[in-house]
Length: 529
Image (tube, rainbow, N blue to C red; front, side, top):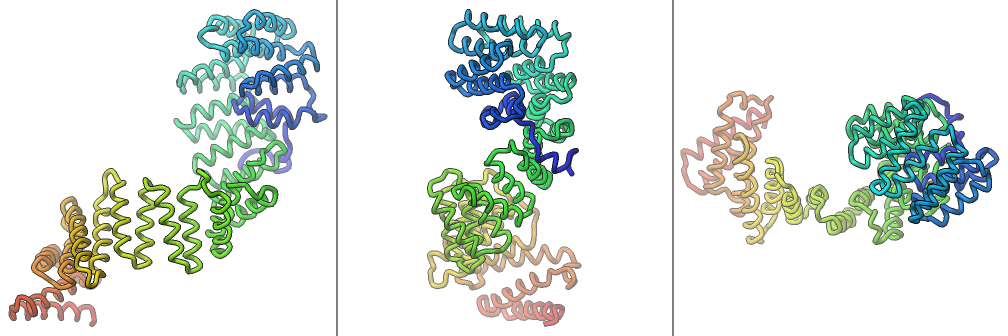
């Protein structure tokens, strides 16, 4: 197991306390769902407190009417529960009734004389209403909480941490959250908020804090979920999927979490289990977008191409126009089509992806490969050219690869002289950029020579001769290149063959033709031909 606690323990939950934890961690939608789900459970032993947090959740989400209803229900459940008076006071402040707020806060203090968290909640109510207008009140109640608790109230440091975070003082915020943990080692919001504040600075330390929390509270849905998410963000796919598998057995998980689990399994490369979970989600909710996606991309990974094609087709039909569709969806669909031999249809998916995501340079690069595989060399060159235009600083390898795409297009142009010339010229532009920026290398001049030959109707000309001679100069600089074990003899053979042809058939120089013929034959002998 990743952390303390067994799977059996992980299947338990903290009931409404999970909702309170989510509220305190600032995850109001999650808090609302769990509190509403658990308010009438027999295990909800403090309904007045549950109603308070339901009201605070609604207030945070902007529904004042619902907030008042829950605060009133909290008072009805237990008239001496201090918290609901804090909630009513917070609502008064939101409605501009500062006097009414003071009265409710007095009631809260009456019933919560020794409850320092109540004092902090009053300070938070003023802070949430308007931190500038009520700066004095916030300071007064914070000072009171410090004094009365002898500086040991955890919620005090949580609020001060939140105030620092609002000013983007992440170091200060993390320090305050650390203090909260110091005075309450089981404080979920302290751990979660600390991890959030510190994650971009030190992901591993942030994760360690959440592992500590889960060790302290192994049944906390918040602890399980947050740690799994941090594992995911830190690229610990296997740990994330393992912990998520434990978390979704917690009764207080959310319906969308099972689809999320399928995603984590996919990134952990457990494709059979990811597919199984996705299909379970779809059995309950056939319209679940994420599960629909996972089903066909898992099937591609499992090389179940026909089913992948069928399900990808259904995915795109059901989700036409959905902004969540991404380039990988198209690419994976194309891969499935290639898997069943439908290469021409695969190309259409790549083209659709490029049309929808024109700024995606990598997609253009992939499309170029697809066109090349389908022997559509002109489009392959154009796609690679378009890719280079998206790159701020193309590499020398980018230039070299582009020259190769244009060489293919020029060499296969047949009788289309215009296409042959244009493609060869563009290829020469790219290979010359590579030559200008790189150390002299034989393959660069080989590529240059071939482009000259393609431009000349696949016949050697003087430009090609000069390029091959430059290539030979580089090769001859190291006698070891004539050793068959070094793999350079193919370059020699190509250059000598074209030079023999040029001097024998074009320049009509018998002596040079004989010289290169002898060299060509010597290389062939070394190659065992």
